[in-house]
Image (cartoon, rainbow, N blue to C red):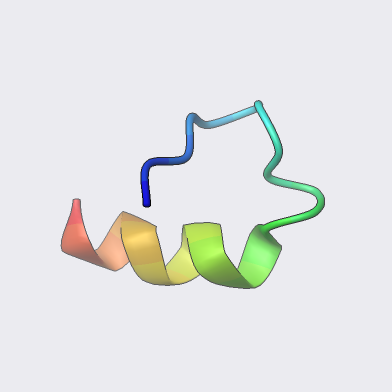
Length: 23
């Protein structure tokens, strides 16, 4: 699951938060 910062962060805040830790 790859999410770009500023892409769908608003809808995937929780997912992006967890992904950020991995990155």
